[in-house]
Image (cartoon, rainbow, N blue to C red; front, side, top):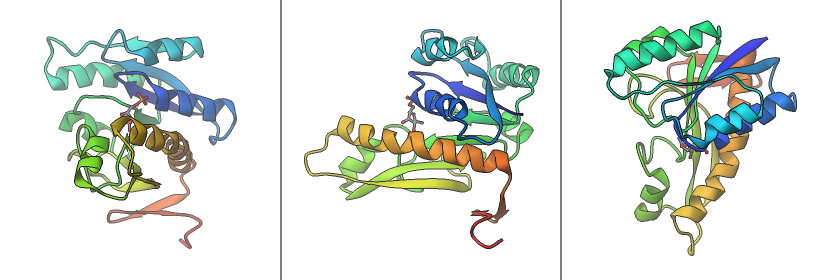
Length: 204
Ligand code: GRF
């Protein structure tokens, strides 16, 4: 049984999507071992508890970034996690944390990377005027929204869209590709060549 640790700061809909994939056996023999939030009032904490998933609130305030990350690493190790999924975790991770878990941390970002990194990616896409946007699941490296790409999905940007409309359309795809990407990584049927993540189906 592979164990997943999920880091959140907010509503946790991607965490729920992963939990649903586990429940529906769409994920290769995996479970969510712990959900960690840096925000006590994050909606995702209650959603995890309702699903019987262990939760921990680790407040980042009053600590250095690395001190906080060391506390998170200790919690993740306690639960013996194999993979760490960032799901709306709104803090940068320290280089220390990222080096502790090489190719073991995934993130979901609501744009087609490398376009529109950082905050408010959907608003950035609207403002830029792109006709298509989407979402990306990638390995986390020491640069923001930068690591090797595992999955992407594309959605159209429609003329009448506001930020909320576009975010909703992207979110539907996020929930699909995050579970697929986690399943792929846990199953190990891929290899990495430079920045390219090649799935076993792509003639390894
Ligand atoms: C998602 O749009 C995700 O791509 C971004 O933050 C948002 C988190 O939403 N990183 P949720 O907390 O998973 O509902």
